[in-house]
Length: 65
Ligand SMILES: NC(=O)c1ccc[n+]([C@@H]2O[C@H](COP(=O)([O-])OP(=O)(O)OC[C@H]3O[C@@H](n4cnc5c(N)ncnc54)[C@H](O)[C@@H]3O)[C@@H](O)[C@H]2O)c1
Image (cartoon, rainbow, N blue to C red; front, side, top):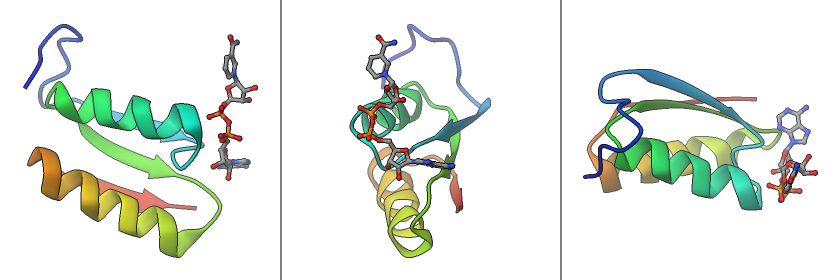
């Protein structure tokens, strides 16, 4: 875990979460202990990305389109 963003326990929403920048931003927020809400257009893919993020970083992640 990293703490440079000081986001532990916060909730961060990321639009375009499946895009090149969105994926990396979601991962950095999660790496800093934030819970993440992922927003993108493909509901199935964004839900899968949220589940993967939660499993990898041990945070809570939700998805919506
Ligand atoms: N200012 C800068 O220096 C800078 C640098 C890089 C990228 N950007 C901008 O940042 C944005 C993201 O870049 P990227 O490389 O990740 O792009 P990308 O095309 O890889 O990803 C964009 C994502 O946004 C999603 N999306 C599109 N419309 C949406 C909507 N209405 N609601 C939710 N999600 C939606 C797409 O499905 C896609 O997954 C772009 O607008 C890009 O122009 C700016």
